[in-house]
Amino acid sequence: MKNKRAHIVVVGNEKGGTGKSTVSMHLIISLLEKGLSVGSIDLDARQATLTRYLKNREARKDLAELGLPLPDHVALPPTDDRAADEARLNETFARMASAHDVVVIDTPGSDHYLSRLGHSFADTLVTPLNDSLVDLDVLALVEPGSMKIRRPSHYSEMVWETKKARALRGEMAVVDWIVLRNRLSNLDARNKRDMEKLLADLAKRVGFRVIPGLGERVIYRSMFLEGLTLLDLRKKIMGFEFNMSHVAARQELRTLVDAIGLNKIGAA
Image (cartoon, rainbow, N blue to C red; front, side, top):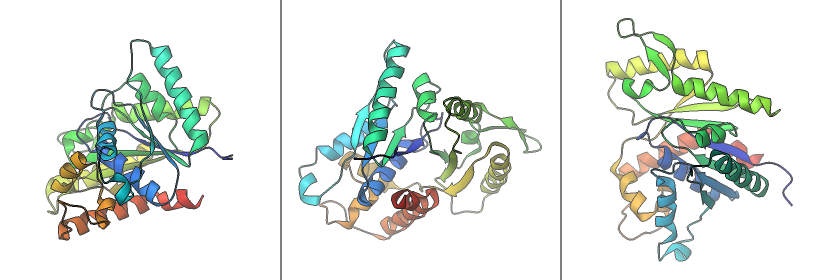
């Protein structure tokens, strides 16, 4: 019998198109490949990208032959009844947290009551962020002339509020908030340097750490339709020839998993 609550990884950002579901899927499969029991919850009802990704995987005729692992997955689209929606999420979370080693929660790119509740469960919060001043706006308001942070923005404030909600439930453990700089350019452009400085300043103010995320690679888009991840490409799969771009992408994933601390989760 499992007598310890699962480690909860929430993948969140109130901006769409930052790669939340791709990151969620790769974290889930990384954890499963480590032999851990994994539950996953999709709160992004509008897009449901993680759910469709997993359905694409489940539909593969070679799923069993290749030994492709799947999590215990639940999609929780909201209805018009907030109390009932929150009760369903609390019930699903309680079941998964008691049954699995890790639970990964994928959240919508908007401010929603289910997203806020999901965030309040986080032991680790992973925020994918495109390396762009436009995308930084969800975390901080920046003065155009001085390029200094005026104040934290709406998503940073929401994370602070959900940390308080967690404390009110008597859960005093510190949330490890990680910002992933996705789609980093190889060029040392001014935008890249500005982002590095602004994120470093903001990290001190609101309490997150910054690590490199996943690059902009065509392979991620093609793997979604096939229900595959970079980890699956170690096997011989028709239509996917392993090349140097895949090697670089897998190294990015290893760096990301190590930096988040999934190895520590596995050893706990």
